Image (cartoon, rainbow, N blue to C red):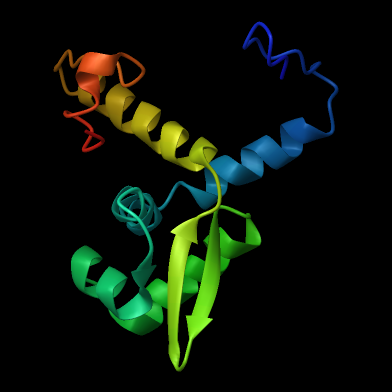
Amino acid sequence: MNEDTKRCTFSLDSDYVEFAAEVFRLLSDSTRVRLILVLREGEKSVNDLAELVHKTPTAVSQHLAKLRWGKIVSPRQEGNKVFYSLTSEDARELVSLAVFQASRMMGEIPTHPRCPHSRREFGEG
């Protein structure tokens, strides 16, 4: 990625193409998308995440392990509790763009998530 122009300069033969496909596989689960949406608000414990996404803590831990493997979330231990947070803004933006695209598929035309007026629509403002 060229930071000056914000254009992707990777070639078709880049080793990162396979890894990019793996990122999409990691994000292809609705529970993982929901976890990322919740974590946009900040760090949360496994139990809090489980309650918010309506899954068991065990199931959430398994999803978080996959997101951790993909370096999308990172853990922090405090006593016997583990808290998770997003490791970068990239996953947050990717999920916001995916939700934007999904809303367009459903016939809605929301303001684009990169537009300052759309932050509220995507829970970011």
